[in-house]
Image 1: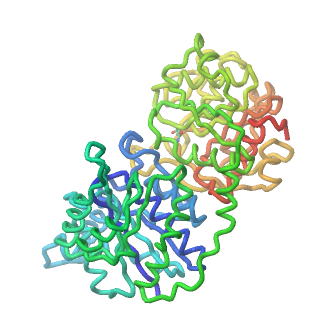
Image 2: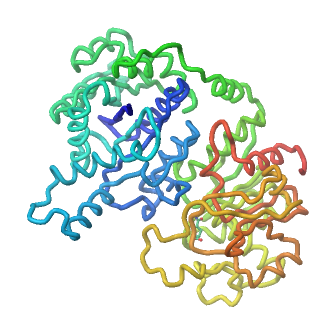
Image 3: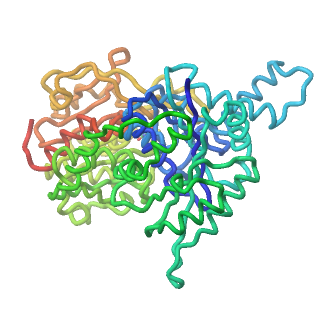
Length: 535
Ligand code: GLN
């Protein structure tokens, strides 16, 4: 019998619902349950693929090619599950399917309304994963904050589902914020009380409250909140700021979040979960002393824009007993005259993914610097394309070499629009997305890094590709094309074997790196950045 846990947020956004959802998923999984975690976002975009990272941070991509919210990255990294397009739903997708049905005539004669048609579609989506996979728990995170106009249909659907499924099959967790007012020297519970009242006004009684705080909440405050919010005292959990998000599951377990949820759903929690491997990871993370400075050369100067990359570097760092200090270096500010200073003291350089012209010349200069000074460098997607352009300009001697994304009239279009993209006019969901196979050249660095496995499968998100017309010239001059798609021959990986580590991947390895299974390319990159020499 599958059970549903809903996670809502109140007071303010950015409280870390995704981390709480992932942590609870991890804990239930450690108790032997089969889980999935899904995100319902109230915005109207069909998916976040068309959003600028400044809006919602990185766009994450599932193996089956859905562009999703970055929280799905947390779900996969914490739990190792593989999410699919059904784990990410937006208001846009809900309305689209209802409107398509209306046009088909499925509702002939009826007025199509938010209740029941939109809410029925939301409820169907909530339960869809469990109809496709064998699951014990479906954790559903509702994006946004209670009180937003657009989240109302989602909350109404949760209310209905709880009523239909009963309290042994559906549970509500509400995450709020308890601010500390420094002038008064006090933690304030009023915003939480107000937020719970708002939920109650919508017919939803939270079973568990998770309170985000910067200071420890005393028992008196927990009792007060329990009393005002109709919640058991032991179901008032605090989520204090911790040095690492990976400590959150441990903190939640210590306060019994998983055991309380199980009890409320009528399940005997039994012995504490076994997550020894996770604890060993945390131990190793804490005891790592050596600091590696890795430059992230990109144009988005915000923490969340390269989330999966910084996490992948950190995981791989831990397994090499290093702390990775990811240093953002704005590619718009990099020029030939200052590149040495900007990248001084870096143990490695990641040339980040991206779209459009802004900041690309700085990425090319950074690629050149890494190649000429033999600094380990990892180019990802646009980063790989910039490595290719740099090589064409400075080694092959084509000063106008470019991607047609940046210069459509160049005669040295070393990065070209993919054939199947030429007729594409719609922007949303039309890139080359999701997992594709890739044959590796035996003996190459990447072949060794993957442990001799070939073909591999990796996730993509791009429209442009390496132009095979130039393949011979690159190979002759020392940039090897070491990974290709078996069907289309698209170049997926380039490397310069004469350098310590100079690899560009057209795919995004960061999407499939998890805490306990860091991606082999990040592992190999960090190993060399640490100074452990060539493979
Ligand atoms: N803009 C490039 C393309 O579309 C790279 C995309 C990316 O870095 N994700 O091919």
